[in-house]
Image (cartoon, rainbow, N blue to C red; front, side, top):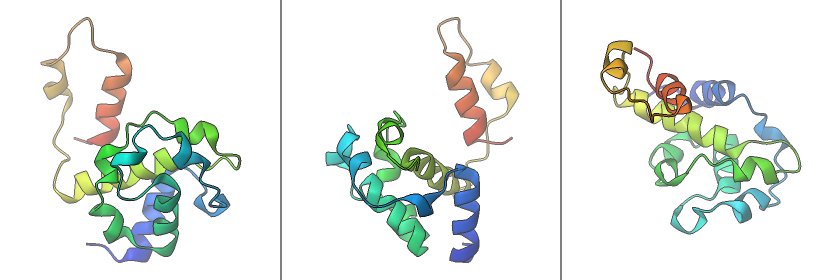
Length: 129
């Protein structure tokens, strides 16, 4: 595990959002279709990250409950993107467990005509190979 200050900086950088702008209004959480299944709500997720509690986020079920639908992003009056922060922490968790395993060759074998291009882009963002 990296030191929390470094890890928080890296997560913020990878998310390309400015978490400091969050005013904790809760609009992001109110818009979230997965709200009931999350142990840390989107607006709370931002607070955890700003406190440097990366370990709490890495062990959160929210990482896997977020649908990446970006409803939270659309509702934020300050332009904070909780979904991007959650995705950035999710990627850190995957990489921490050694999940950098997908290669171009792996993807080619799984392609079909019905597969959306967005899925391919997301796969390469999640796993560097």
